[in-house]
Length: 142
Image: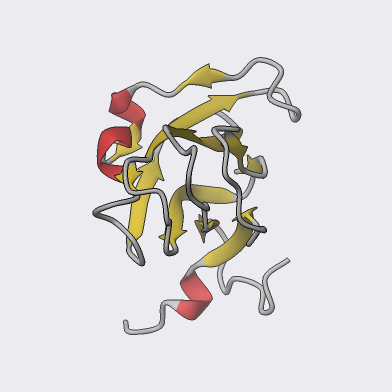
């Protein structure tokens, strides 16, 4: 079936934000997987002006709604690798990255940590793409 709109739901992960020139980690919204069969983080990388900056992606999960019990997700519970979702300012401007989560915990979040971003601006946004157990997915997404 060609219908993907009714079979996927979207949640905000990282809102578009003003440019940064530091190495402060960018932490996503926590996504609640109750009622969903899986999720993927879709990262949209804008034009980053610091040519030597790198950005490392970390996926964490847990059972507490505030993720006070957060732990790094084992590669066994990821579709793709965090290293593949990570990117550099010099080579990956205006590209997309994705990483999927197939673990058993209820809550998930992502952290994108810049390094060597001392002379440029960071432009990043991201969304959670979820597969609901009950279809059709709500439109607009909630």
